Amino acid sequence: MKSLNFFKFLFAFVAFSLFLTSCGDDTSIIDPDKDPILEIVAVNGFVSSDTTLRVGQDFTVQLKAVKTDNDLKIITIQENGVKIELSSDRLSNEIVANPFTVAAGGFEKFIFAIRAHADASTKTYTFILEDVKGNKSTKFFAISTVAFTDATTIPGVLFNQGGLPGTGGLDLDNGVGTASTDASAELRDEGIDVSLPLPSNWLQQISGINTTEVKYIKKGTNGIAENFSFDAIKYKEEIVGLWGNGTAFTATIGAKSVSNKVVIGDIFIAKKGDNYYLLNVADVRIVTNGNTDSYVFDIKK
Image: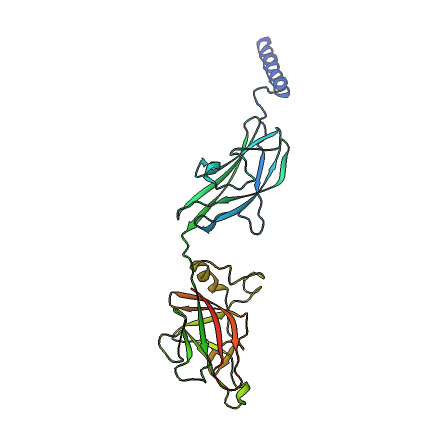
């Protein structure tokens, strides 16, 4: 019986010792420093996620850096894991070194530009924030670049279909006027209303011909910016990209869709097969003593 009591006492002592140990400080667990906080701020017009750009296009980034346990030190900008050298002339003047020094307490907004890589490929752009103790925070996105082709702009004149023979059509590939039924034409004037007097009988409406589709490009509509400019479009790929933002014709003549009355400043986009054309109405020439009226287009293709 005494032996049993001794073992009970020994067990209780060991258990109590373990309890005391568990209640004390556990010096075997080290509380690590928190990593600093880096954000790529999503702002309209700035790149903050995977994006497709043209080869060599400049893009803008906005960063935010937040201090945690330690003062901040530097930010490094990398392309595919290699820092972008200042000598490459691809970083805007806000970047004076790479890596560049960061204020110890961080910042809410730092805006700078980067020139995308010069070949058609996908590369990862990485931003690494580091504090004075070497703790890091990393953010990145991918830029896919495509080789854009310069667009060309030519003039073209489309005459009233009700006027001289052999007019009323326009070949958008070369800006040459044709007959309204010519196989080379993409655009056609809709002619006249014979019930109206000569000075006002021109319908001043257009439509596509020979399988050509035509839409409006309207500022502030269907994703077109309010400040959209015909002159700002420089590349064929931009014209192709605008097609989905076009506004379909709603007027009709018989079963055919046609434009409303064409006025100076109207912008149209036309598609025939794989060919796309952006059209700016530079002038509308109205003739009151005949039917030699015409539209003057700037044709970008």
